[in-house]
Image (tube, rainbow, N blue to C red; front, side):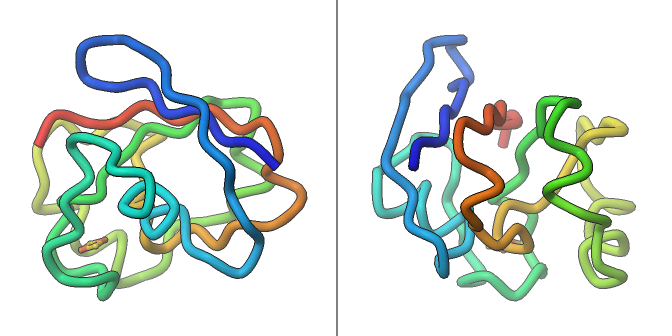
Length: 103
Ligand code: FES
């Protein structure tokens, strides 16, 4: 399955994503710039911040409480902000588009 990351320079990178990984891990494995994942996926750094294209809201689910708390203290937060380490890749996300937030 494929996921598209829109980079900070607005170019698109389409990468393979395997179910069972987090979206952050997919980004890191594919060296997506702007996804640093400093905390290793603990929802404690916000360096994996992305904006989820609205058509994928339902499939990506709600923010977790920890994620919400982290986003409350982050920059450039939008309604569609998510921490990509808190999004589990499933087959339902095939074709998803996410934009990498400014770090
Ligand atoms: S990797 Fe740190 S919050 Fe996602």
